[in-house]
Length: 109
Image (cartoon, rainbow, N blue to C red; front, side):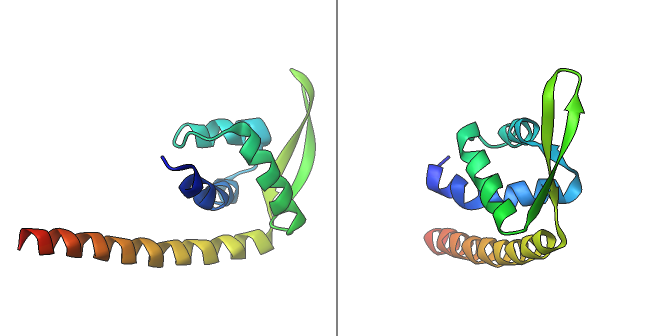
């Protein structure tokens, strides 16, 4: 998949996952990687930016397997931002689908 395309939707994917439950960084990277091949190094700068924008908050939980883990949690501001992104995504995918379907019908007709 195109790297620029993935970067464009990574923010929405991160926020969508965090809207359902809190994740620590590595766990979040693993979950996203199940569906989209991402570099772990691209996730942490995004998480820092989203936190700086008050879309996410963090807290630490002690771990029996090593150092404490920093968990990311969605804020109300982040939830509203995600709702806006999802609305834009819906409009974009609808427009793209209309274009693709229109071209396919034109070629067949």
